[in-house]
Amino acid sequence: MIQPSIAQAQPLTHTLEALRHSRSRPELAEALMDWLRPRGGQCYVLARLPDGPYKMPDILLSGGDDSEAWLSRYRREHLYIGDPLLAAMRPAMAPPMNWSNLTQSRKAPLSAATQRALDAMQAHQKTEGVSLPVWGPSGLGGFLSVGGPLANADPETLASASLLAAHALPLA
Image 1 (cartoon, rainbow, N blue to C red):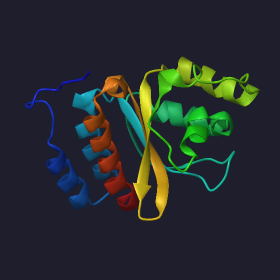
Image 2: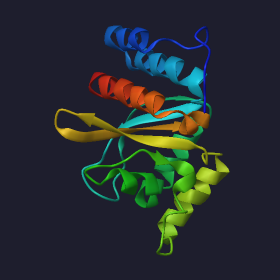
Image 3: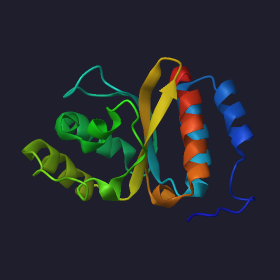
């Protein structure tokens, strides 16, 4: 469990204010990363869910280690087609998805597209992390995927990350 010191971590209310007063996507991205990093977030993507399977999510914000290289490969190789995280976010009551559980809970063999997406995640060291549903007034609107040990954080920290993402989504 990650327990950042008070000196390291921005309070939730400070970050909500920073998001609210951001004037650009880079400022939004930085405010979110400033909150995630001391809690174990090494990189993140905030995106709207696509309107159907096999479509690219609308990536609004990203930050941290290797984000641009990973997103470039994700787009170029159409990895969203087999992305098991997108599939996990589809149900109406999508729970947080710890990346280490992606293959453990499967009973059926993985499709070639899913295996390719998992192999790419492994190559980019995207094996430790969590994807959180982002809820809005119209229901499930997107997701926040955070790489790093934040995946092992306590439920309150994960709920706070979801809350920040819900505030950032319409601003991005």
